[in-house]
Length: 439
Image 1: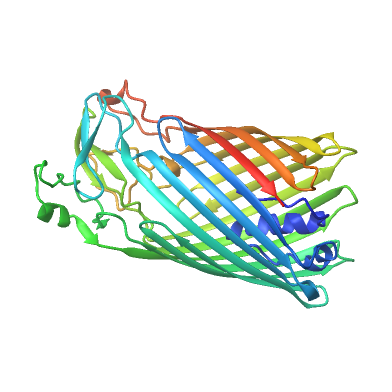
Image 2 (image 1 turned 90 degrees about the vertical axis):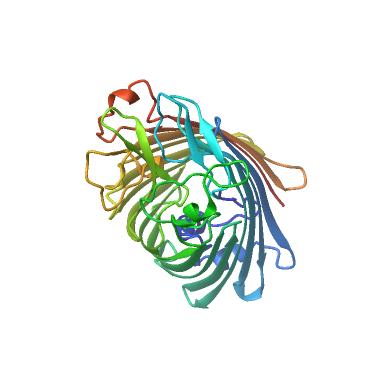
C-alpha cells in the first residue's frame, strides 16, 4: 500500500522514481530531495496515515494500519520512518483438492484436526497472524546531481522474522530532466512455523492430543527441523525521463535472487488413486532457490485537467512463471479541492513448472511439487474508485473502494472421474477498502 503525499508540490519525476524503485521494499534516493525540501517546513514532520481492510469471500481477511513520517532537515537531508501493523484471520486453502466426500486434516501444530465438506476447496480455518514492520530511510545529496539513500527493514510475525538493509544512488542530468537510479537490498528471513518444518512429501500424520488418535512421536517423525531461513538479494536499475511539461516516463529492470527454504510448510498435495479419490496427503516440496527478473514501464500524462497513469510490468523466473501486469489510474478533478480516481488493474501468469493440482499414485513421484494456486496459472483483475479531498486546514483525506477477483485456471491437467463435480480451480473474490489521511 503506497501513501502519496500531496501537501508539498513535489516534482513529478521525483515522485515516480521513488514509487517505482520502492519495489525493493525501500524508499530510494531518487535524487530529488533538493527540489522538494525547498518547499518543505524544516521545523516540522509530515505524516501520512492509512487504514486498509481486505476481505476474501469465506477466506482470509486482513486489517492494516500504516503511519509514515517524514522530516526534511537542512542541507536537503530527509528522514523517513514507516510503521506498518496488520492482522490476518480466516481460512486459507491448504492445497488439497476437493473430494466427493468429507475430508479430515491434521492442524499444522499436530494438535487437533478439522474437516471440509464434500466438493469444496479444503480450507484451513486456523490461519491467523499479526505483523509489525518498521522501515527507516535516510536520504541526502552526495555531490552535485548525486543523491544517496540507505535504510533498514525489520518485520516480525508470530512465526517469521525478516531483517533487511538497502542502499540507493541516483544521478540527475540533462538539466534534471533525466535520472539514472540504482537500488540494492538484502534480506535475511527466519521461519519458525508452528509444528516445525515438515519433511518434503511426507504423509500428513494423524493428530495427537487427549481427544485424538495418534501420538506426538509419529507427528515428530514427519518434521525435518524447527526452523529454517532464506536470503533475498535485489538489484534495480531505473531511468526516468521528462518528455515535456505534460508527460513523464520511467523504465526499470529488476533482478532478485532468493535462496533457502521456499516451500510453504502448511501446504499439502492430494495423492489420488486412478478414480480420483484421495489416498493420502503429502507435504509440498519446492526448489531451494529462485531467480526473478522484471521489466517495468510507466507513463504519466497531464491533460488540461485530468492526469492519467498507466504502467506495464513483465516478470519471469526460473520456476517458469511468466506474468503480465497492466495498471491504470485516471485522476479527474471535481473541484479545486476534490477529485475522483478510477482504477483498473489486470494480471495474468503462467504456472510454475512444478505446479500440480494433485498427484496420482500411478505416476512417479516428481522432484518438486506444489498445489498452491498462487503459483498456478491464473488471471486476476482489480476495479475500484478513489475519492480525495483537501480539507480546510490544508490536510488531505481520501477513501478507496475496490473489487478484486482471482481466477485460477487449469494448466493442462485432466481431472479423474471423482473430481468431475468438484470445483478444483475455485475463483477468489475480495473487497478492498482504504482510508488515508495526510497532515
